[in-house]
Image 1 (spheres, rainbow, N blue to C red):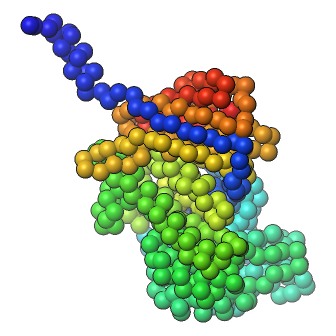
Image 2 (cartoon, rainbow, N blue to C red):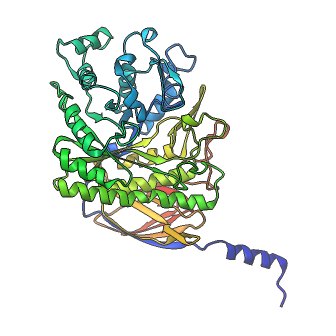
Length: 512
């Protein structure tokens, strides 16, 4: 029996396309979880590549529109995603940064070599006053990381005094002489960065003693209470967490954790940011889901030493890390940002929500032009990345109460491996609105999610979706809106039953 050619083509096409798969979700709006602190959506701006110079800072004499040297377009972009907290000046840079070089008249500030990132010479024009001005302009709390690696206890002690003391004292008077009368409010202060590596190659026992010494001299001046953050582990170094919690757990407010998603898991050859095969789409998802185990195991150690959960887990460096964009300085860590990064961000946020009783802050690396950036700049031009749009869509979760969800999802299988295709989270805001965020990591198949909602009678459902045709779809200066949120029409509500059809490779946020 012979089939017409057209029928054969249609049949082969249909067989090649995966059918819509199904998932189920139970959302218990009659129960409450922990508050999802807005600082889970924090950011990180290091003196690295073009993050600060050219990205945030252009100087007051620049033809690029600016406010006291800070780009106006960057200010507007960061305000729109409600950046809650911003970490600075590093990173590895923090442990070679001497803050007094970055105050006073800019023309008199000494230059320095950025030995960690490209060996470039920096003029120190962006320092303490400029950073604090940036935080005020975008409405973010400052998170300052102090120099333990190459600095001194006195240097750190004096920086805290300069920032937060209202006394008639040497450092407070120096601040006044530099144009700032009233002290700033600085809550978050990191005592060193990656002390196990670029911050000094220390053993955890040695760093614990150094933390005791440095933290002792970071003083609480009247009207300002510091939240002291100790340097925590590199990914799966559980012994570091064990030693720090055992030896200085009662002396810290927070303990950091760093983990980066590499498609290949191989630092010398991490994988490309665009033009990657499906194998690297899959491996990126698999690598980012390692965060689930890291959180569970580090938190278990913290729970054993601190059952009251007084010490916050601070995931102050996370995100994707690829091979640098060809033709750029490899020390600048510039990379494109695609739809894949948006999926990674959503998955990580859902994991952070799940542990919001212990996680007090996270900081994506980094804000501008570096690694998983929110914004890319080129001279006067600016483009928003897919990751930026996820941060904006998820602002509905800021300071909302997490709601329990039970998700049954199909797998996304590739080769001999598989990962969950769908991830989800839900919260209730102060106005009583329920928001549900979902991510479909499957690059080919749409997935229909049948959701039962208990304890919340919704009159309607609205939403937005972030997706695109290609796995590596990304925004460029020539095509800045290739990946952007759109109105979502794939959700229907009937009583307590919500049905959502998630497009392949998509992020969806719904309001009930």
